[in-house]
Image 1 (spheres, rainbow, N blue to C red):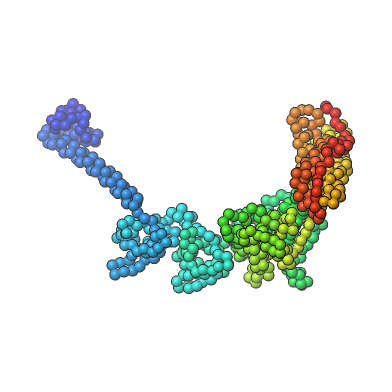
Image 2 (cartoon, one colour; image 1 turned 45 degrees about the vertical axis):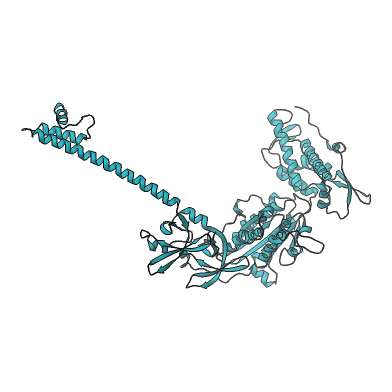
Amino acid sequence: MPRLLDLMRAAGQNPRETLLTEEDQRQLARYLEMTPPPPVELLVDLVRQRVRVHELQATCATATEAASKLEAMLGDLLSGNALLCPLTTLRLTPSGPRAVCRVNGTLREFAIHPAVDVEQLRQLHPYDYVVVHEQVVVDLWTGDPWLYTHAHGPVVEFKGYQDRARHLVRIADGPQERVAVLDPSLRETPLRPSMRLIVHRDDPFQVVARVPWEQTESRFEIPVDRLRTRLEDLAGVEDIAQQLLEDVLVRICCPDVRDQFGLEPLKGVLLYSYKPGMGKTAFMRAIALWLHEHGAQLGFEVVLYAVKPNETKSMWHGEDARIVREDLWGAIRARQALPRTHALVQIVVLDEVDALGKRAGRGEVVSSSAQSEALEAMLVEMDGLEQDPPRDTAPAYVLCVGLTNRPDRVDEAAKRPGRFSLVLPMPDVTPQSAEDILAIYARGDELPWYLHGEVCTHVPVETVRRSFLRPALGRLFHAVVLRYTTDTQQGHEVTAGQLLSNAHYMDVMNRAKKRAALRHLRNSHVPAVTADDVADCLLEVACEAARQIVADPQMLIRQLDLKVPVARVDAVPAEELDEHRYLRVAAS
């Protein structure tokens, strides 16, 4: 190593700053150890050449990095001044092809940079873009998933071909038809009427994609196999369930029998009750689940759609009808178009169907046409249902079920035959059905009951009915909780049984169980449901319902369907009803 240092000094190099690699140093050391040794002048010249080579390499690397940074800066500068335009077509000129692009709604023509592949330009989709700088197409922006997603606009219906050679098709967005051009990716795809196509968001005359057959889901669809409410979980609905199921089976699911006896297909059912909380929604879910579970045996498939009151409303004019026509019925038609081996029954449950609106009639004023657009779209779609089975596939049927607490507000045109033609009232609550409802929510083998001075579990249902539910209902169901006076000063009394709905009895049992649970947590008194719990909670719920009606007398008129004006409403004080407390539980 000392000889190597002397050699580097002889070459005029600083050993600490010389750009020699370890390999160079090892090679020079081998030369110095050779016998006979090479001339010192030759080794000095070799050191100088190696140092020069490394200096030039370092300079080239620095220059290359600087050039890359400069190129990136120029690219950023150009892209910052560039314009992104959708390519409409290529026009052949004597000087070569030129790009025709849409800029701010107008067509403009640009030259094409020699570095841009013209064949790639021909294969662009409507949602791809070209990069234009200084009136020249310099690059492409394509293959970006964001572009594809952003370009998707409204879903329309394919009506037919206008000009196959030019790839022009007729599409419909509601009743209006227009002509659009197909994306190159769709020009070899076989299309047939009723197929759903997607147009470009910013260009309604460009079809960019087709809705696949598998994409038939709707935001209104509820998986039937996930429902948990069964008919046996409901009380007092046996008669109405039998009537509805008979109509569905005879007039929908068995077309041979229907045609043999000349019955009209069932398209719509109106299920109403003036009193809210009677279980209309739960009843229809139980009906859908029953049909689903028996569908395999009877040879049909069930699909359920649930439309809530505000889901068809929008602040934009015309959007209400579009939601009904496309979001709801578009999914229904798409599922009907799917190939199938079993009959298809699609049930559309319209909660608070009166919220769809009502058209202006005699003595009625509608402030805006938007109030009835959703209703009119619904009626048009119902009238357009194809209930007859096609020849090449299993039949498909649609049953619309409207739920309402205000049947008087449902448009008369909706209730005519052929639409919501089957009108069914929810059965009123009787002492027996009230007991059945309480018994449903009193189920549970581990639920503790205070019976004969002891805390018991696994109490038989009949014992719970006899010792807890029936006595409480016997005192409270016919107890007067409300009095009202008409404009002719005639007094009338309203009992708890008239006032309470199915939901109230569910609330009664839940409150009673909560009382027992709190005593269990606090380790005070009886840690079980007592007869007093049931009776007290029944009185509590009845008094609360009475106070609500006192605050809003119109509730009384609606729920009891009164035909006379009400001048005064008074709730019976709870002290007058306290006689029901026939059983006291001493503190433990």
